[in-house]
Image 1 (tube, one colour):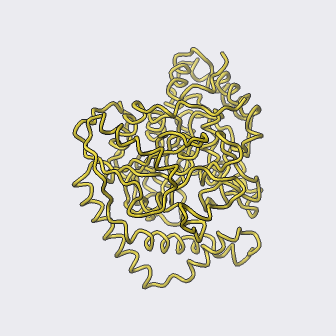
Image 2 (cartoon, helix red, strand yellow):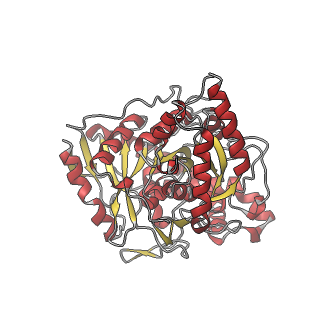
Image 3 (tube, one colour):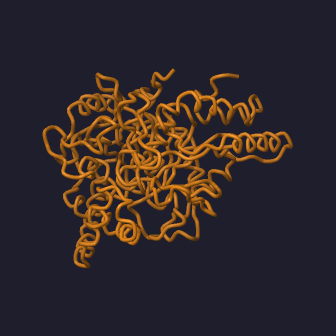
Length: 467
């Protein structure tokens, strides 16, 4: 069969487990696609074709023997290059780790492989995953499959571009300030930041951290739910892990009567008019599904201080010693962010903790009044790949590499599940995603709302024109 790389993950899984196609055929189809288009987009930066084919052969033999197989049996995947992968170069996008080969795998990688997936390689990231534009001195930039002159977003930019270009049917990622959501918006795919604790992280130096979480990416909402069911579940090494597993049940749901809050600027953030023009019809989509829609925003007035303070503090803890030892091996924006962390005082941390508690309570009050919050994922469409970040949005200067990500990271501090679903294209063909947010721990509802929107507005089916 040809064109297997074009199929979604659930379709491929059905064909594989029904023995209508072999894992070798599926992997070879994706390897051929990688050879054809990856040199132009630079999404997969480490590739083990021989190892993938050998693993596919073993997968076929296992199925033929009648042994039980996992839900991702035979599906190829390249892992985010910030997720440690046993025996495979994992660089974090940093020259300090250009030849690093870990002796263990991150928990999410282990779970995906245990579910039967086939390891292809690694997907590109910004340096240490910092910033929502994927470029680094080890591998260079990842380009947007819909316009090779544009950014694919980040930090899971290589993952999003690989999905959009058909290089793999599923992708893993992580999200602190929008690293699953922003690249999904830029590349017309689905990126889901689940409730913190839904997908536990290991290893981590900050096991109590809820700013950062791993999560799934896919070309469809159903596929994202499938991957989440594998990544989620308790682990004794994570003190914030939720006890219940996530079961990928049917996402079909009647949305009639749901109370939807539409927040076009999330409380006054500058948003490019091209983004708002694409998202404006979303209101009518939800109304057509029987929802009541009003314009409203949770109180996020302290989100900026909370996120910036805690992020800077965590960056200093994680990278400060390396910056001291190798000051010329860090991009300037990351070095600035680490040094900002050194300016954080105990008083700052205390104030940030208290403000975060107020945001949490305000969020719960908001979700007592509304079932769903919808807003822009990113304040801008994909920007030129040569830029590190946009210098202005709607005439408002952006003073740092973080400013333009506020529509994602202000939502981060709500502690709620947040998903980017394809919503449309600008007049020049650049993708724009819609951010769907629900009450903490209501991950299934988030996916159900996204599925209904995706069905009503199936723009995610529009593939990039890559020969």
